[in-house]
Image (cartoon, rainbow, N blue to C red; front, side):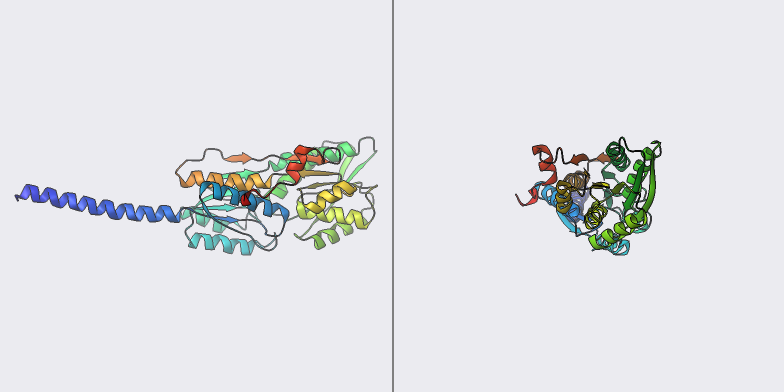
Amino acid sequence: MNIKKLTAVFTLALFLIVCLFGCTKSGNINLKNKDVAIITKGSDSDFWNDVKSGALSAANEFNINVTVEGPENEEDYNTQNEMIENAVSRKVGVIILSAIDYEKNAPPVQNAIDNGIKVITVDSDVNVKGKELFIGTDNISAGEKAAKQAVEFCRGQKYINIGIVNYGENTENGKGRLKGFTDFINKTKNAKIVDTVNIESNAQNATAGTKKLLLKNKNINVLVGFNEWSTLGAGYAIKELNLKDKVYCIGFDSNVNCVNMLESGEIDTLIVQNPFSMGYLSVLKASEILSGKKQNDGTVETDTYIVNRKNMFSSDIQKILFRFNESTN
């Protein structure tokens, strides 16, 4: 065999070896990148159970490996940060996060992005650069919807005195809802926000905080809760203080106990989000990212619905309030 043929054979062999090892290495990376870590704000509410159901439904449909976890309460950003760091150490392909704290969750999330992990935020955003997209409610608009309901309820009354039951002060979606609500109320001449209480993410603390608010400000005739826990607290407080004929109550989300209080009169309106859709769309988008599709959306808005005693028994609203666990189908 002459030198030219020997060189050609050697070059071809070397090329095949490089391709073989290159393909094997690339295959391992793609396999690892199929893992998606979903980190929610909490783990003990109907809302997060619905997000999980939607995520698992999409994971089954698109053959994506997902883990779903969240801290025991929605104030524990330290545990959430540990979960983010663990996902980075596992070199997952995508992190789907609902951030407890807009600022304090930012450092580990930014570290994840800087290490090449794609990040999707759901329901509540975080202050980082380079995330793929946000999926969730237009919270400013949702807050405005709640304000319009407050004004509508009190049409004909001389004064609209509002008490607000909110949650984490540094949670992005809570601040958005408060802004939308406040901006609208500030344009209403006979309406004012009398007082605000921030509660922890459990029914006992939410109820105690709301009762204290109502007993301190007996002129309140509208009470607004901005998430599932604050709505539960508002409803229970009105029930325990026997104020359902004196105080209009507007809340968020579709906890089964909130729906029961909507029927019995302690709560008058629920602004219902679509957590199942949030979970499903987040995994759908993660699947697209893992397949190499570039995301140009920036924000994907999910629907909100105004539910009251007049429409709560309609077939369309019943489907929204009581979604089946599609992930088990």
